[in-house]
Image (cartoon, rainbow, N blue to C red; front, side, top):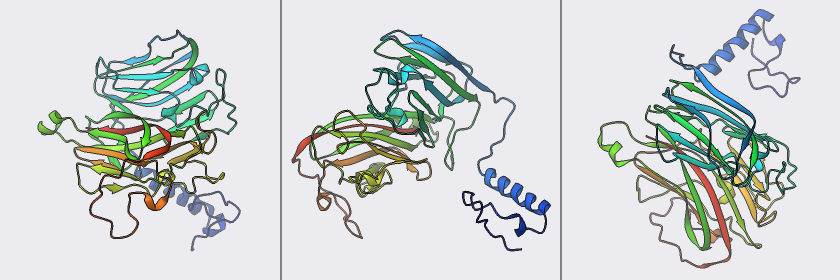
Length: 378
């Protein structure tokens, strides 16, 4: 019989149907099982005998001020870190940072501020030790979440070949709760792609004080020249980007577009028709413009500086919208642009074939950009 959706189960996905749409209950159950199998088949991977779960927890651990403390180390690689969670005062602690030393590197391969890396602005966590009066409910995206004050987690897949060492630092003495999980010999699958074994997660930390109109660099990644010449596969994939943007006084900075230059191409790939558009929302100045969704988020009042209308945080996850490159990629945002027609981006089709450097006119008020952009490079 033709399948009909149930009006009673309006929260179901398209695979939820009324039982009387099938000849009998057995047929209905077979259809449900088939739907589950088909849905999961594309994500399934074989489990070889050498895969095993790894990790640890730390309950109520003490962290001295300005001390880099090892919280986990594994030397039996290869593998992936698959999930981490933090709770307690550490989330609001000043200067709380995580560092990851991959494959015996003496310098941190990844180094990030705990809140910004999880899509949380300086004014968006009101747990003990914070001066924020943030009262929004918890939320979760595909990669990271802020489910409660002083509670965050992520599902970043951090690959390593031989070893990984993870450390925690804060500028004031504090207490932390921590959990980390991983799997050895697990293939790295991001979206629809199985990445090479030599792929490594990199973080670009952009801190820009915008005093004049410019193309501000939000992300910049390139393949190691040695990798290109050894015959191995090389390239990269942008995972996502998180921004905090604020201005001291009322100003407009949201009309500039976002673009990317891939492999040195003369023509940019345009990623948005405005700042908030890049984060898949619309109408920057509407009080109702806010989102915390699996692939995108946008929220005002992100920083103590700037207030409600001049301080925003946004995140964009690119797994279903891949940004791929072979040798290099640069992500840029034109700012500050307050009038749409002045933005140097396409205003019709076909697009222009050249994009001269915009005039370096002074900003009405300086705009601060702090952005994290993540990419896998191999």
